Length: 84
Image (tube, rainbow, N blue to C red; front, side, top):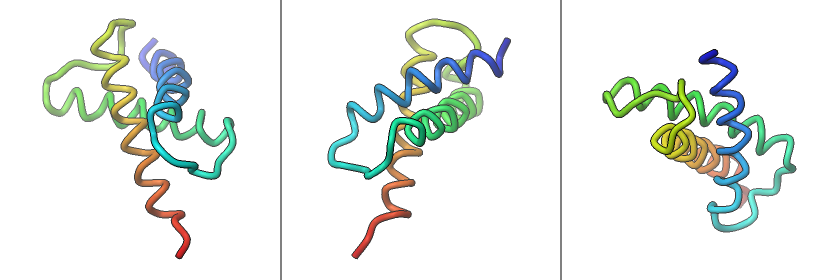
């Protein structure tokens, strides 16, 4: 159930992170969803490493971890693809 939960959180977190992140990242919704899923994995990993929780259950803390991970991944993606 953990991997499936992370994917679902990734879908939600990617949409929320895209809404929160300022500016135009120049990517479509499919890329946002993919980066959101990666972000949910990152958020879950960060949460387990620091003992803040995991992204294994549907609760508020898990959504926050997934969104923070998605924001981090979107920020890194934006920095890596920045032009000029």
